[in-house]
Amino acid sequence: LLGWVVPNSSITLPKMLENFIAKNKTISQKGCITQIFFFSQCACAEVFILSAMAFDRYVAICDPLHYSTIMKKTVCRQLVGGSWSMGFLYAMVNVLPLVNAQFCGSNIINHFSCELPSLLPLSCSDHLSNYIVLLISEVVFGLSSFLLTLVSYIHIISTILKIHTAEGRNKAFSTCSSHLIVVGLFYSAAFFGYMKPSSDSFIELDKVVSIQYSILTPLLNPIIYSLKNNEIKMALGKRFGNFRFLK
Image 1: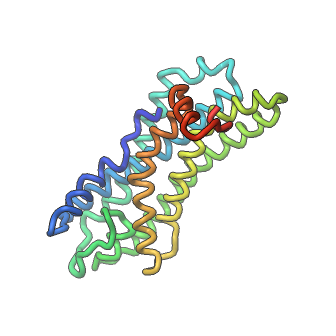
Image 2: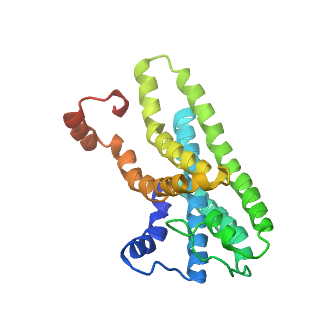
Image 3: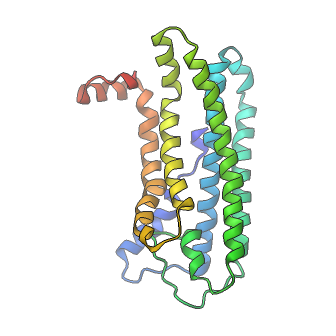
């Protein structure tokens, strides 16, 4: 399932690097809106794919005997297709109102990339409706995917606690430990970036946090998920000693 995620860094990083090097750090209005669309789509799709992965781990731990019959290829394709459909819907809902928006004042985006919270204050149109749509869509899409993940892990943790042997609990927990780390990194940064109070004192911190969920988290994902690889664990064990959570 993870292989179907397009990292947000592939959308924002090329233009970001270009602006770091170029003297005139510019982006067209259409280019900015396009970047927001694909960033929003990929971010929302990733959230729901993380929920699908949580369901996958729920089936693997709570109903292992029926795993092969439940998590068939057709089911995985449906989960991925549904995730991308939700991402497309979320992006369309938030980007379509920007098409007719007027930008007649300051055109300086105080951010490393184009994002709705940093672009809307520059519009001289009435953008209250945009904020309302953004808030409602974040609550609906974000909360629904978060609840799906939360419910899956409530059942997973409940099942793990019922395992009598420590070895069995450690083995079951190792199945979902990598996914838990990625979910924690993603949600902590996303919730701060979009749910924080609107204040000038948060602007610089917001820019730093955006680097985490748009660049660092996609960069760390392959490393985190490869911790279950025996060769990686042996290399880390030789370098840092034996870590129980890697076993």
